[in-house]
Length: 508
Image (cartoon, rainbow, N blue to C red; front, side):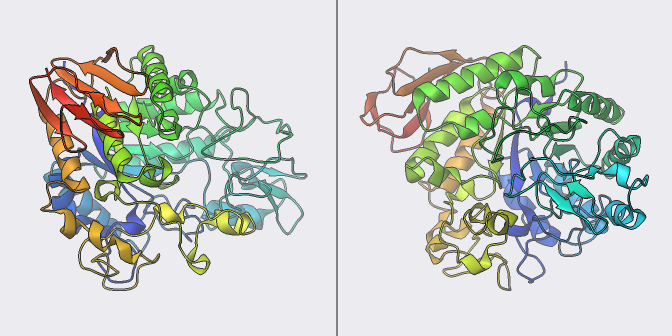
């Protein structure tokens, strides 16, 4: 049987606005990304996931889509996208694009037509319009309902510029099947599905009785009127059937914030999606017992449907894990070796290979995340993990752009540029390159089984066959390194004892 590449792929997330600017306007674009393809290939990843590149008013960084079949001029042209796909393939990289099916932009022609057509019109039936709002809350803060001029209200689980689509409508379902075909015909290798858990709503629109909502730390979603509804699975079965016609190597990955690995497994049944981000792992604190529990429950639940786990430490919606774990670079380095030794696939978020931390001191006047405004300036939002990358030089913009970056970079990043780390064998960048190379070369790493070894309470130790042991010390005191033939890779200076907040791969 041919190996399925996606079962243990390492995929690099490109937040396109902040990756590399090839045109000098301060915003990352397709020209900048194409120029960096040799870097990404050399890093050792298998594929790139690119955040939305479609025409958009940018009320939410491109996740408010006005046209699903074109490229926003700030990023380039459709021809540029096709050239990028071809160029990536020549470098041995696959391309996964972001599809945003829960909502459109309020600038989308469908929504503009709905506003013009008025109450009771077929155009409004593509969205969720009601005469009276209920108590649902926006993930970004405030009510999930906004009123239009004729007095009706429309639903937006995110920003008011992102009206939710009505997925009970056959035109909506047909439209997105056609959008998928459009990009598959241009050679993309897969899709990351934004808000995969939110597309279907209870048609009765019952009240929740909650005064809050959240993306990363949601309320109970086991029987929720707009999260993780059973109806989403019928949609994904139709999508899986579509991609089958393009071959076995085109894939989906779900962004599904659900309340348990058991619920997540429902999204990756054999006739639905291929993979889903493991957000339980991402949300887990730096604690050995809790991490082991998440790893076990995830692998066990996904095994029941024959799907691999898909691990992730950071993305464009959460605080960078260098900061989130509270232990700085040592914990982040150890976390990488833990993640890449686990069975399944993994996603890396741009800049984590440089050891970038969350920028928590951005000036208030530069904040652009809609959470900042909708929370009444009480929540800063996600801009701190979206600051443009530092490539070279000793002062901003660090080779990101010939112009002024759309978010300012901290001067302290001079020591974290790609150029500063490139030839330093002890750098975070070199650790990532070494880990990805070894993972690709060693038959024990990637898809397969895991067996736990006896260890101290603050230590995670497990074997991958044939012949690799991973040990992670999450405690406050050094621990003995198990017997081994040689050290394959260590997150800190290797020794007979493993220091706190460090990890090692051993050949046995």
